[in-house]
Amino acid sequence: MAAGDDRGSPDSYRSPLASRYASPEMCFVFSDRCKFRTWRQLWLWLAEAEQTLGLPITDEQIQEMKSNLDNIDFKMAAEEEKRLRHDVMAHVHTFGHCCPKAAGIIHLGATSCYVGDNTDLIILRNALDLLLPKLARVISRLADFAKERASLPTLGFTHFQPAQLTTVGKRCCLWIQDLCMDLQNLKRVRDDLRFRGVKGTTGTQASFLQLFEGDDHKVEQLDKMVTDKAGFKRAFIITGQTYTRKVDIEVLSVLASLGASVHKICTDIRLLANLKEMEEPFEKQQIGSSAMPYKRNPMRSERCCSLARHLMTLVMDPLQTASVQWFERTLDDSANRRICLAEAFLTADTILNTLQNISEGLVVYPKVIERRIRQELPFMATENIIMAMVKAGGSRQVQRFLEEEVYPLLKPYESVMKVKAELCL
Image (cartoon, rainbow, N blue to C red; front, side, top):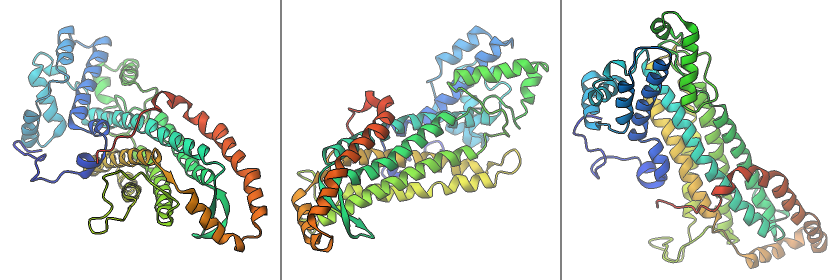
């Protein structure tokens, strides 16, 4: 950003994801302050590890860096970047300006991707840590809803044409099952994340071998020490200049799959709202239409569907980026990743917050459901046979599904289950 820009003003475009929809905590994870503070933390970890392994770095230099982790002059950094046309060196100079004694050892032996890529991996991990309990809460709310209405008969639809009876709770379990798969996939991707670590310009660690006079054991120790400090269990053994962009594909594929699940759920709710069998929460002073005051539009579900479509398309960015990374790396990944990674997580955050709000206030209209069943009964064998089928299998099926597949999956998230959804708008 050029010095003097005022891009937060009403006269400048701002992403609705940040200004209107996503939670403050997710917006912070992708904020400049979080990003550049993490860069400084990575420079500190590198210096600490290099000092431990024998490089001439003093305690005074380390302390100076520690004392200035949060002392970021964003205006100076913007001016430096405009002058240098290099974001990392702009922040090396800015950090060095407030750490004059440590200026010479900041970024020692590192390449830009040491801070850039490792920060991205830390951010991806932290963003996934925010999404996991939110998704678990949605599943928990829907499980409560399914259990309460496990035995309430309703007309099932195939091809959106009347079929056989199911129950309201059983239908909800279809939604829950998809979300449970998403929860498992999010957890897998989060646990599979590896640190890029300390690898040098082309992944050979040549600069660090030179610093440690060819002592490859110390270079390996350096890599492990910084990886441990960052809280990762593993680092990549092989990298180019960057970590493989296949990681971004993995992460955004799981988020896109979550988007598909949410779109299906909210489409079902929208269709049921039209049938007047079920609807999302509708507040006392909420206005459904500026021209038709009697309308009760399912705007939360519509928002989820709208944003879920955007989320599903974003996986195309890392797919194409990974396919065109030449040899050890090309810089045409950078601008694209600045946009698609943040947007994917802010979008996923928004739809989960909104879906939790929906699931906490779903309203069912049993009389409407009963009337529709009775309208279709003459076309479905006999009433007694069908009702006996639901009575025999519906309720037990839901209870078994919840006890065997859902509740064990939610157990690690018990401490956050009581948190209510808060929508920005």
